[in-house]
Length: 538
Image (cartoon, rainbow, N blue to C red; front, side, top):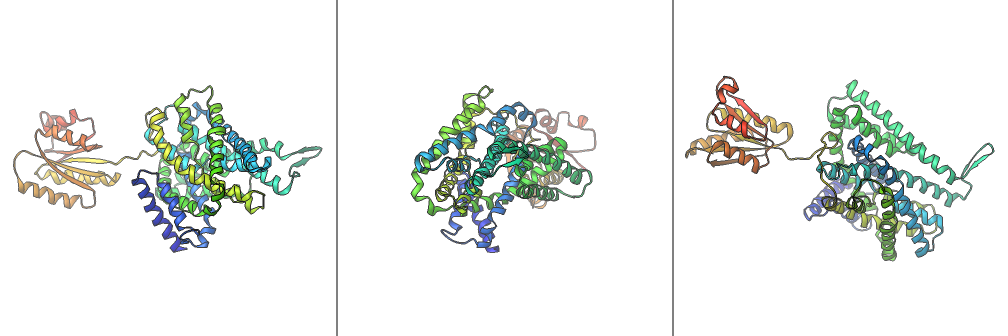
């Protein structure tokens, strides 16, 4: 098992990086790595790891759904609440019906089996959609109208609906029609129970999410049982995973929805705690993403694709371009979404992966007629829509969505921090470098050291280089020398390197205002659009 884990992590990571450098989504490389490592090609993954694949995928999906919950915006969600609710039901329903009708026509399936296939193919993949939407939020695309939030919420609700209908149809096909309940003289069929089950799953999922958020708030913030962000994330991930496991044993609520809701409520209850957890789950996702998509590739049954390739692509096209498009149109009808924003749903709300990998083989295992075809189409949907969706979301967002202001309280804004340390040949340079190094360590940033020469001074330059090696030994740094007007050069280099702050020194112990009149430091402070940190000589 250890060898398999090493193969998964290293091969998955470097395959993802190669795909990224080729301007393809990283998950494409990871899925291909899984196919190569899987039992049908390289056979480098042990049966023990393959047997635990479902559990490992569950952990990975839990991580990404907690990230989604911690990234939801209550105001934007309230603004788009009706659209989000409609996106949770209409596109999935229309796609499932379109796929069912196409399967009846092309495969001569009966209605129940066709709808079973529709539920599998209609489910959306949180593993593709959630990272894509969170990245759009971090870049500001669609945030003004809350489009990513509406898609995230609708995706979670649609999976609840389709998984419920899937379980109902599976019971009907394997056990017959007598699967309802009787309350006294009242007899309810499974179809009549479905609305009640949906309401129960959603409401109890939200309620348990709120209770979980309260519990985490008490344990992690008020009682201070943890000492750092890593422990915060560990406890929160364990509790979230417990929700998912409970939902499997007590299927009266949606575990995944409860996880997402707990993250959402944590933002409202304690912003600083939510921010720490967001960073922790970002780190967990680095590993979880590799495991999820490599095992996803390893689970794809390539041998069953050949006979159904063309007809499978036709069914996917009918479901997505036909049924789902009608659902998108109906869900956003009457909203403030523009035509381009509605068109974005084609790329932002179509990817399939995790749900199909989890339930695609169940009909075949249950002996349902046509189960091999269902498995083949589930595998095909992963191979086609997961890479396509991961590529299309960042590609079409700038073309179809409006860019707004990023809210750093809801998402982690990824930005490389660069600090500019302006030094001369005086003893004050060591203090400026020490301060820049301290700031860089706090944010894992880089330091650009700038020396503006007034005259040729090779000994002074060599002294600065020695000080840089002494004080910035563990910091990524770059040394630049230039000439010209010192304030102008400092601001020019800061702009060229997109610096976040400027660090420079002042001599003496007088007050800043009285000392800097007419000085280089004051010229920089008064004209710089960036924060300037002044280090005073000791």
